[in-house]
Image (tube, rainbow, N blue to C red; front, top):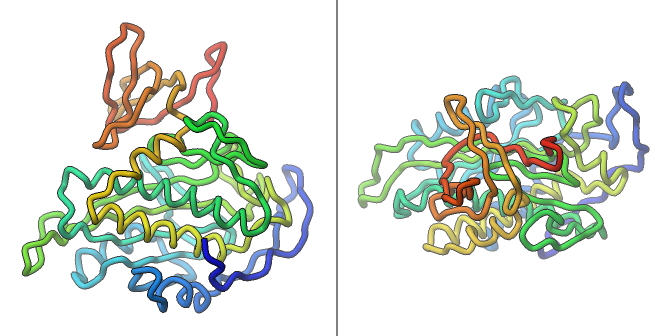
Length: 323
């Protein structure tokens, strides 16, 4: 990524054990002017707006509502310093102390993109987040390779990988999650293009300590990098720059994001159990991701099963589960 108005690293700190309720890296509010200058007030990206709310219920809920009530809103970013009702998949909550995470939703109109390609945007978002993280980390001298368990198997100082369908892992721990929602699906613009909006919402753990995370398999960048953790502004600028590129590729009919998702996905090649909507279980080896975003499993009998949605658990020897 080009050096766009980078800000200093967070001040040095130390790793803290469980039970010590202090942030690993000092926190502060986001510099909104800096991010707007790098992402909105520039010809190098196509974002039309960027806002930061001090407190809101859910950035996804806010953007879904905006998609319905404001037809002019497109390519818009909303971040929140604190969410009182942050949501993940299957009604899970996402809660983080103020100023400790990057919690955002993007509002992206489908326009002339056919419905058959809508499922590619969540994959493109996952790729953009992981590539943006790697770019920001390179700026501070951290080599973040694609996870050793992913298709490319490129090692680095830390390992980042995608877990189908919507998690980002760092050294095997959950660093980020995503919830994607649709809005205004049945509306059109006067030119006949679709006003349907896709709203990917992402929560990334940045400065939390272990006790500030909701589950014991979650991790923050500060837990891994300590005082080398990039600022939240640098991380956000890198991620949104990558997301802008991927959205443009998606709107122009490109499909590279599918191959790139598979290349960065540690689920591929793994034996997995998938809890399907409704409670049924699927088991097999993950072999690929289809063009519609489905995970393809090869079952014990050799058949290939397409999984459209579900909770994936990577299985290791002895029947134990990885995060």
